[in-house]
Length: 328
Image 1 (cartoon, rainbow, N blue to C red):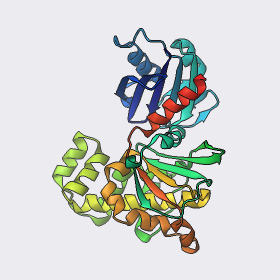
Image 2: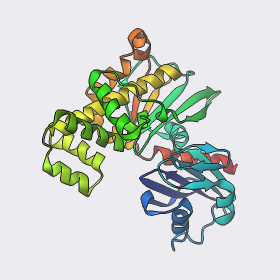
Image 3: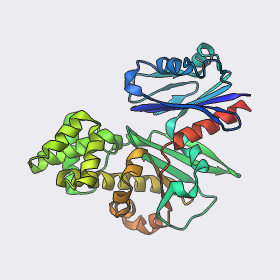
């Protein structure tokens, strides 16, 4: 029996899944990415586990949050560099494929069930048109899906690193604030976990208001972006709620930009943990209002179906699919 290894490598966590060719999951495990100096270290720890050390891996797909050129890739928000041939030799894996994490997410869309997708805008779908996927987490990923017969050809991009373009006077002040801190300001700098924190800090300074001390403590003790989201939704903290809403508006605007670039009449998909965890706020209108606010092109973007992915392991599903393809 042949085994497949799918790995979804993110700036915050790395998820492994070892499975049989028939789809039986043998072992699935998550590791904190920041706790390891290299991908080799975390891969070595995974394969050395007693329960799987006697298994051989025939095919592996390593999907990483960063650009991949040929047989090499670098994780954008970690000092990890991967070489497919070196990994194959070191870990005795017959076939190794590297891809961008949103390439894997794009392939994973076809594995989703209806209850793992929420429609934000029905639009007027055209089946043989392109698709697109965008998703905020530790970073901001984007990919295109082009119809090719009954299959999809996926084109990964680094569109999350395009320049942030504010759409109102407060966002202009946010941009000025971030330029002073960072110099270049990309959409990923704003539409990501650290971006939500930056928006919160900007609003706190801009409005010169006292923040909730419990929220500040929570931000120090856990993931600060998640703490802001939690206090926005569960405690109705005014500052946190305003930060989350501004984040969602900017997210929607960039998704609309992508829609204009690609015209994904077969669907634009929203992935990433931030959207799924804040689903109710995304459904309340701010995201779609910003998505369709495209002036003369408003009518066009209203026709594009917009769907939000609830399945957090969509990238892992796509990586497994790619691992199976290269084994043939």
